[in-house]
Amino acid sequence: MTRSNQSNSIALSEINNQLFTEVSPEQAAVVEGGLRVQLLQLRCLQAGGGSDQVFAEFNSVRSGFGRTKFMRTNSVANFAEAGGSGSSVRVRLRDASDGNRSLGSFIVSSTTRNSQTRRISGNGSTYDVTFNAPF
Image 1: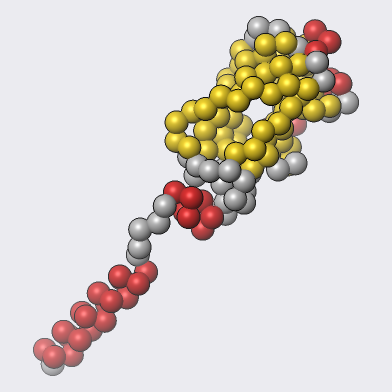
Image 2: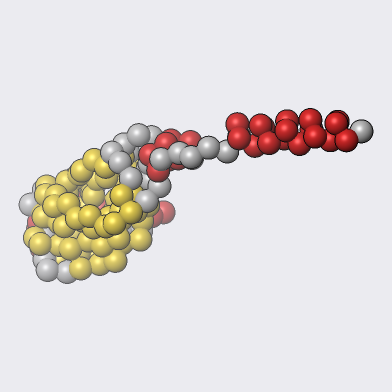
């Protein structure tokens, strides 16, 4: 009887070792459905045409349930939007007040827990976009 319990304990230990292993953040992102980018802040350095109604797209999918941020030159807005999946994410800002024209884009291809800022421009507008990609 004791012998049976010991062999069961060994078998369970081996199963646990097979099921639980260390993975990198990049590997975890792929397992969980891919890289995800969080936009934190928008800083409008120049608004084409005087103002923009900004929304974000992640891999061509609009975020924010249709909501936009009204931006003028020198304005700053917290922008709590997140999206994306796959091994890389293209983040694009668009202007809803000007036929959804592109305000610029950038690609994130690895996780980053610390925030980063990228400058984008398009359609007469220039923005600094602060983001992270923790998963």
